[in-house]
Image (cartoon, rainbow, N blue to C red):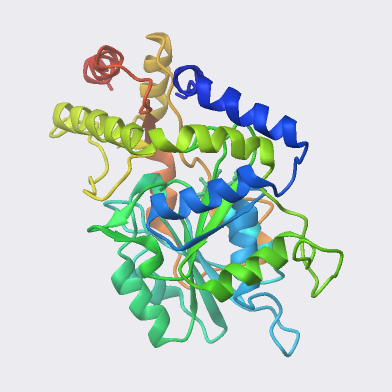
Length: 365
Ligand SMILES: Cc1ncc(COP(=O)(O)O)c(C=O)c1O
């Protein structure tokens, strides 16, 4: 599904030069590579500031903390709504703040939360919503941001699968000041290890996040508030600086592949999920009532596939104790049994995509 060798080959000169500069300086944490990357990544995503942190999970957790979410003033946990269909790390970020999880179901056509599914599970203690731009498709942000504003809740965007995504040309930061990204190696923009960032237009939010990621320090030995140790490493920033100029081209390639799959699979028994024109196609996901047999057939043809995600949040054994919902998230439960992610990445050639399509189309349920 993912092979970084081509990316490493294309960017090798820039990588070598960045690493050499890092070693010459001998600064491995919060140095010029991280600073340069923060500036370039903010610009690439259309935001004003980026704060590099240790992972996408940390980017989500620190966003919630920067917004004051966790234990309420009376000691009772705040409630944060998360989609039933997302990475389990979205939920872990909420629990790390001391808040409680409230699970919202998703819409059947794109598996995203909407204002409608959020409203259905909203409670008196709801203080924040995490809108996950699943598979690279931005959520319907206008309506979700309006709902959060009306109900005085914080909107955090989980853009861990949506590097470069905009909504009809508008950057994600126009809808809320917390846009959390992951640079896990398989992402549209990946490092060679863990990494993450929060992008915002708000200078005060950026300042709070810089304090939170570095133990309450600001480049000195003074602790101004309780914080974390979660910084984007200088070495990962060397790779990210070298890869970033390719992001747009890689996203274009993903778009071409997604169209190719869509054209061939529409009207078949294994259609793709609804295609969002603003999507950066982190994953291309089909639905099949005989998904497991289809995956076995693909594997027999030498084709890898994935499931994102096989267990929805409200069915995760380790999360049950900390999660609640008002409406049973049935759409997510059903989808988890039927979805299959097909190979879509910049290294996937047209011939490879056609081989995938042929295998899907010849599959007899
Ligand atoms: C939607 C989503 N949220 C959160 C995360 C967590 O990111 P990380 O693995 O960098 O902590 C991921 C990545 O796995 C993700 O895909």
